[in-house]
Length: 318
Ligand SMILES: NC(=O)c1ccc[n+]([C@@H]2O[C@H](COP(=O)([O-])OP(=O)(O)OC[C@H]3O[C@@H](n4cnc5c(N)ncnc54)[C@H](OP(=O)(O)O)[C@@H]3O)[C@@H](O)[C@H]2O)c1
Image 1 (cartoon, helix red, strand yellow):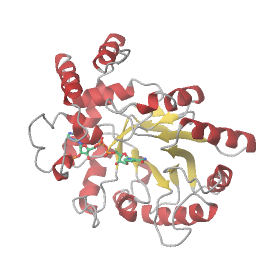
Image 2: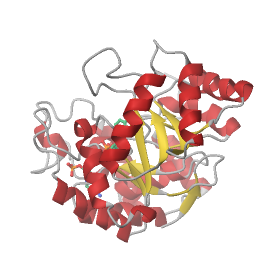
Image 3: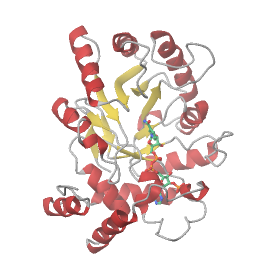
Image 4: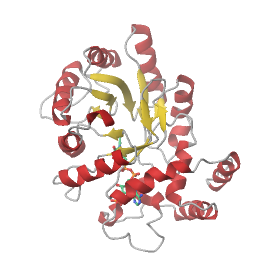
């Protein structure tokens, strides 16, 4: 496994990370993983050198953090725990959001579930339009000073909001964000317009989520064939609703001709971007973790990157 600095911080994160929003069954997601399965996945991740483990207070309404904490008992040092705050956790006006009151409550609850006294990366899950960014950053700065949080980051923030966040920290001399977590993959490139250039300029690490586009970039879903048994899309009523098989098949053809798989291409292409620090995919099987970790062996050349751009239709106006 190779490691990269998370943005302008000294924190070294594995190029492949582990997403855990499929940890913790509940009424809405009865097929999600239980504690023992989650522990097996975490152990497999640590075994291949993955240190970046991404969770959030809302995943499985706390269960994901609880399972991560349980699985990391006695192994805390091996992991970078990235969690998030913002989503609804309790009834009442402060049961969600990014106010000082909510953040101070939620960090304690997360630390308890995670069975640790610090979080490596505390991320603002999405924007809270009812709280000023100054209040949120002052609360996070206090948590950093108290040693409960080591680094801070955003998620799902537009470029102008990231800019506002960085400049508020700069002007008030508060701890600044080192990362942002947006959706990003070969099939979803919205962040390339504004978020990515901003992150490049300010050296903010990008942690792409949905890197495999719900599995469409794994090669296991085929045009006109039902999803394989037990796969994520099997549970959907219209599994290929958003699937562009023309693009998927051309990417797969390119990968195979290069002696690789589309899965390896999905990771290698994201990791060809200098601002990408760690690519977090969820996994339901140990073999998935192993093949995801192995994908980093493919470092794309300039000519391979231009071929991929052509396949993606870059530079072609409609
Ligand atoms: N910040 C945010 O707002 C936000 C939003 C969403 C997610 N996230 C984070 O991003 C993480 C990643 O999201 P995601 O898990 O939905 O990512 P994804 O890359 O879109 O999908 C991962 C899924 O693909 C399948 N898969 C993974 N590796 C595979 C392999 N080697 N071969 C075949 N299938 C494979 C698995 O599903 P099956 O085996 O079930 O098919 C796995 O759960 C989440 O866990 C969470 O931590 C953050």
